[in-house]
Image (cartoon, rainbow, N blue to C red; front, side):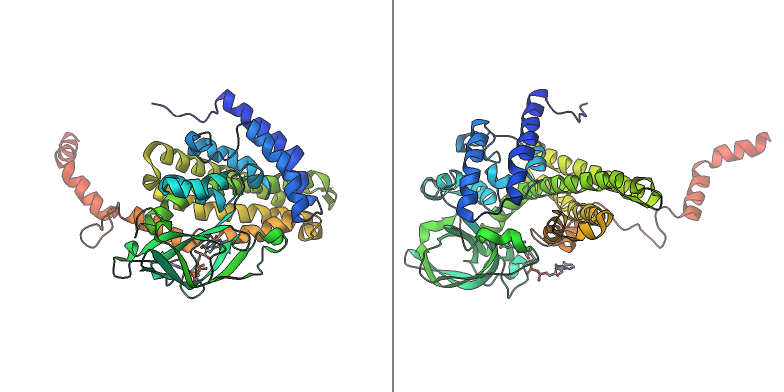
Length: 429
Ligand SMILES: Cc1cc2nc3c(=O)[nH]c(=O)nc-3n(C[C@H](O)[C@H](O)[C@H](O)COP(=O)(O)OP(=O)(O)OC[C@H]3O[C@@H](n4cnc5c(N)ncnc54)[C@H](O)[C@@H]3O)c2cc1C
C-alpha cells in the first residue's frame, strides 16, 4: 500500500528555486512598459538561466531536450510558472508551442522533427494550432468543415479558422482539416503542418477579445482563411485520419498543465485576498474579522485544495496508467478548476473594492483571462457531459419500479433474510 503526498527533497529544491526565480525575475516583467523587442531581450537571459537549471521545456522527454518529468512533477512546476502570464514563455512551456512540440515529438517524422520541432524547442520558431472554425461548433469537432484534398503530391487546403492562438506571429500552423470525408466521424480529420508563408494562407486579424492587453506583441487569437493553400503531402502529421487521436494526446496532459497554472493564479489572488483582509478596516475592525470575509478565505482554501488534489490525482493516473485512462479525471478538473480560478479571483476583487476593479492591481486582468478558461480546450458543459456519461456507464437502472434503496422494499427483503432469527426471537420472548 502506498499513499503519499510528499515531494522528494531534491525535487522540492528545484520548486523552491522556481518560486524565488518567478518572484524576483518574472513578476517584474508584468509591469515593464516595453515593446516586443525589448521584452524578448529582457527574457533571453532568463530563458538561458532556466536552461542552465535544466528546467527548460520540461514537458518533453530527455531525448528531445526535456527532463522527462512525469505529469505529477510537471503539474507542480506549472503551478509555480502559471502564477504569472509570462512564466511559461520563460520556461519554454508556453501554449500552443508546448502542445505542438509534444505532438511533433510523438507523431512527427524525422524530417518534420528536424524542420519544425527542434527549432521550436530552441525558441527559433513559433507555432499555432488551427482547429476551431467560426461556422461550425468547436465543441463538436466532428463538424469540422475545412478540407484538404490530395492533388498529386500536395494537399490543397480550403476553409476558415478562427481563435488560432498566436496565429499572426506563428512560423507554422498545425491545421486540423477533413481529409477523409467518407470515414467515420472520428476518422475524418488529419493534422497538417502549414508554413505560415504558404500562398493562400490569409491571416486576417487578431480578434479583439475580453483578454485585452495581454494580447500585445501579437499573442492574440487570429482569424485565418485557407484559400487553395498547397503544402507537400509529407506535411501530414502521423497517419491520415488520425487527427482526433493526436488531438487527444495533445489535450490530455495539456489540461493538467492548464489546471495547475490556474491554481498558481488562484493562489496569487488568494494571497492578495488574505493580505487585504489584514490591512483594511471597516466598521471598527479589520476586514479579516468580518465573518463573510472569513467564509471567503475558508471556502477559497477548501476549493483550491480540492482542485489541486484532483489535478495531481489526474496527473498521477496519466503517469501510472496513461492519458486515455484519465479521461474522466481530466474532464473533472477542467470544469472544476476553471470555476475555482474564477471564484477565487472574484472574491479577491471584491475585497479590494474599487481598487480590485481597477487596473492598478493585476486582478482585473487575471479575471478577464479566467473567463476564457471556461471555454478553451472544451467548454464546461462538454466536460460535464463527458464526466456524467463515463460515470453513468458504470451504473445500471434498478429493475422494477422502486429505487434500489427503497426502504419498504428493503425492509421486506430484510424480514425474509432474517425470518428464522426473527421467529426465534419472538418464540424466546
Ligand atoms: C482564449 C481562447 C484561446 C483559444 N485558442 C485556440 C487555439 O489556439 N486553436 C483553436 O483551434 N481553438 C482555440 N480556441 C477555441 C476554443 O477551443 C473553442 O472556442 C471551444 O472549443 C468552443 O468552441 P466554439 O467557440 O465554437 O463554441 P460552440 O461549440 O459554438 O459552443 C458554444 C456554447 O455551446 C454550449 N454547448 C456546447 N456543447 C454543449 C453540450 N454538449 N451541452 C450543453 N451546452 C453545450 C456551451 O455553453 C458552449 O460554450 C480558443 C478559445 C479561446 C477563448
